[in-house]
Structure formats: structure tokens, C-alpha cells
Image 1 (tube, helix red, strand yellow):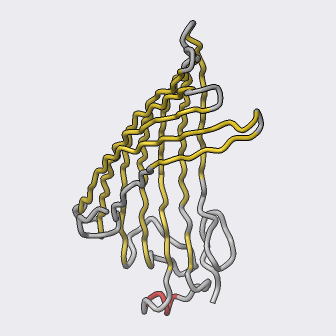
Image 2 (image 1 turned 180 degrees about the vertical axis):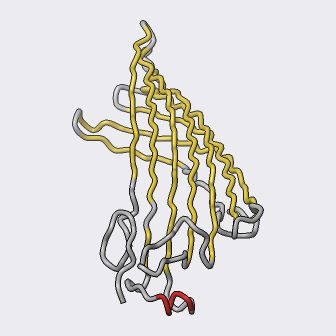
Image 3 (image 1 turned 120 degrees about the vertical axis):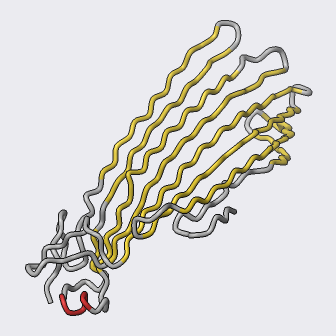
Length: 231
């Protein structure tokens, strides 16, 4: 037995996977005279890796031929995501102020696997060539949201805060096995999530409050499934 070789090196467990990660985030603020500040937050992320794993941490042509040991090559990525948020926070108009904004998110993730790919007589692996089993997955996500929150001083010590967020998200998953036609799974979800809070100031440093709020959890699609179920 001897370890299979691959880019990135590592013992018999496999290669380092050639990881790549880069991204950028930018924030900009503009003050609107007599109204309040408008803030923009923009970010982008790229992630990719290609780990090459010898599951039993050994190389043997005989066990590979009998499918008794597993060489597993995972292609994770490229995964790309982008998000943009705009938020406006008003100045205080007497006892009243508010926050309003919008949010956009896009993500495209790709992944694949190649099991028991060819290995040359000298132990050199060929993970990019078709093996005993190979597949490719892709999931695309889009999300939009609008939100707002208002604050009102009922008295000098009693404050009411009320807001809501409307969210919509859609996902599409594609899966191809042995290079065949892709199966498609998709789903979309829309939610309205309110929030109401009442706060009382006991002192400048201490307060008590009661809050009611609801949240939203994203749905799930199975990219590796041959069904079209979404949850």
C-alpha cells in the first residue's frame, strides 16, 4: 500500500484541495439634509475547493478494481454570493423616528463528486476523468426583503417600537448523474414578520421592556435528490 498522489499533497488521506476564497465588502453613507443618513452595504464572496480523499487512507490497485476501497474526489464550487442592503434612518421628528430599507441576496453554489476515478500504475490519480460514479449539483438562491420600523415616545419614559419585514426567497436546484439530463427542484417562500416592543425607562441606565416578534426560516431544496420536493 502507498498513498495516492495529488495536487496539494497530504498523507494517504488525500490532497489539500486547492482552496480558493476571496471577497470584498464596501459601506457608503450619505446624509440627507433635514432627513437622516442613508447607508449602503455591498458584499461579494467567492469560495472554491477540490479535495481529493482516499477514504481508507491507502492506495491499492486491487481493492480499487473490486470497488472495495473508495477514492472520493469532491468539487466544491465555485460558490458565488452577492448581497446589497440599503437602510435609511430618519432624524427624530418630535417624538417620532423611523428606519426603512431593502435587501437583496443572490447565491450560486456548485458541487460535484467523482468516486473511484482512474489511477495510473504509478499511483498518479486522474480525478478529472470519469470514475465509477460521478454527479454534479447546482443551487441558485435569490432573496428580496423590505423592512421598516417606527419609534414613538408615548411619554418621557414610555416608548413604543413597531416594525415589519416582508421577505421573498426562491431556490432552484439542479442535479445531473453520469453526465445525464439534470433533474430540477425548486421552491419559493414569502413571509410577513412583525415586531412590537414596549419599553419603560426606570432610570437613565435601566429599563424594562416587553417584545413580540416573529421570524422567517429559509426553505430547503435537495440538490442531490432525483425528486422535485422542496421544504
